[in-house]
Amino acid sequence: MDLNNRDIRTIEDVLTLLDGLFAPEADRWSDGGADWWDGFYADRDKPVPFFVAKPDENLVSYGERGLLPAGGGRALDLGCGPGRNSLHLASLGYRVDAVDLSPTAIRWAEERARDAGTTGIRFVRGDAFAPGTGLDGPYDLVYDSGCFHHLPPHRRVGYLAFLDRVLAPGGHFALTAFAAGEGGMGSELPDADFYRQGRLDGGLAYTDTSLRTLFAEPTEPGPAEPRPTEPDPTEPGPTTPDLTRSGLTEVEIRRMRDEPADSPFFGESFLWTALFRRP
Image (tube, rainbow, N blue to C red; front, top):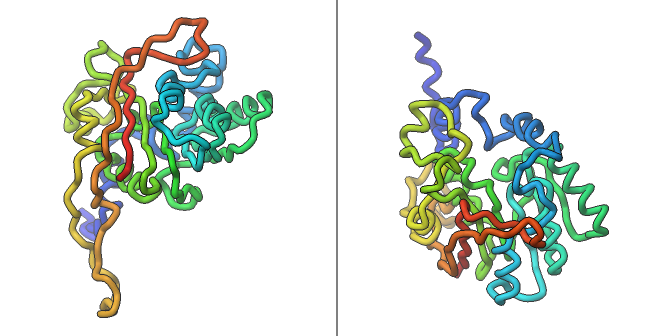
């Protein structure tokens, strides 16, 4: 037995350890899952609802009802896929960073942007939550259409920290996620069971209450990690601001509206839509 591998010292070490409890082929949330997503996006004719070149109906509705500031700003599209929501945000005047794990999805999104003559979008292939992607914000809008529900429970920690870091004061965060009670569109297993079985079953389903708990309630400060050297007494003491947040203000949580095939918008009622604002 090798006892020299007792090297967990940081929160990221713990998160990486928990990643390892899942089978490698179950990864949909890190660079390790890029090949799976490439295969998913390879056949553009598959009957996948969100392959359509239409923006989410809720995203369009936010703009029409004045729930998002007029005139655009900076926006981040997390898990942009073929870019349908990125193109809509650019049409509203936003300067968009669009990120996805899949090179195939990014190429498709770039093609759509060229075909539409859309500018103002920077497409990024990579893990949004890993260092080095250049997604530093501040963003006036962070939009997530189906990325969050593919994260294992422990990776919510980094997701919340990322939001806290990149969302501008007064900025908005919006997402769509699998709704519980839809008979297979997202798993309703307790969080602990995903680690016991080593897979996510295609994604996690959420209730409106759980979304409020995660995004609209403040978290407690995490334990401070020691610095490698004695701190300068004139500097602030060690903290972990990435685990401390004030909580976002709920603007709206509702089910996505079903949209007919001839609608210019995408809509499926098995999804929650949620909009929050940072104070």
